[in-house]
Length: 44
Length: 326
Image (cartoon, rainbow over all chains, first blue to last red; front, side, top):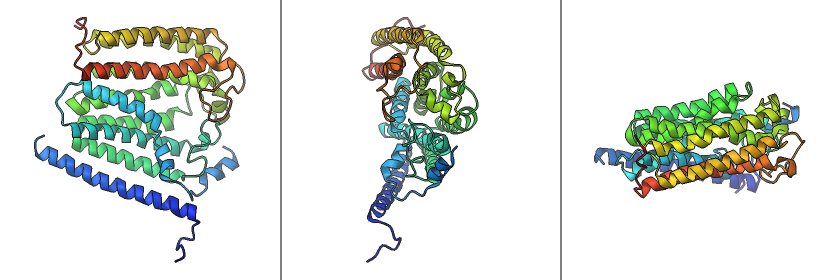
């Protein structure tokens, strides 16, 4: 399947890396908010 | 700004990696911010959930990273003109200026928001003020206008221990501000020592750093003056119930070393020869005429790390402050 963005392999790899970094950051954000909420609700 | 640099700054980033975005956050500066913030947090001696403490420190680190990204985005035009900075992600064309600014805004909002949740409003407000002061007051208003740019702008770098202290205790007592004062007075000799051997860069970019506007001799004298203030100021935590005997010894020896190097620099002709760095990336590898400036620059980093690390370790180990405290 051809690259829909017409990128060269290096650019596609870099874009994939950035996308993963954003996904991980969002997941970490959710976990942090969840943990803070648990600790605050627990009075700890 | 040259036409070429405009083109380079505007060029689309086709191969930016996550490392390029990480570099926008100035990780080396961030490490010093984290150390001083942790020291403030620990010195507050308030029982705090370790997880919340870690999140608060993360927020301070990301706030510093956010303001650094805003700085990198805004300063891309002058960074492109300086040997020391032209390889950075934005001027080199790997990251778009707008993306750097967006990263800065997102990190800033994230860090202040989470700090409010994890710690308290005072810590979040101080963090927001720190980011605003660095990204707007220093970067946009001071840096290109006055030779006192890093003197006043140094407040942003000085505040992390106060933010850390506030995150733990919900207060910002005078002891926390004393730690900030040490960093504030440390900043001019630190940056001016560096700018003495990078002044051609600053002159080319039109940034009025002290060696560019007042000359090398005046800058060397001012560095010595700040060193003479910093050395005794570094001792004061031992007299206000913060530092113990080891801290006092480290601050005394470190302060004497700072003044000696400041004196040697004042007596040298550093900053009066042309380009002194061996290559673009060689921040420490300089030619003979600039070594006194290079030595003070390197030593100043070691000095601040030593002071705050000693203070931190003393408090973590429960070493009591000197009875000199009132």
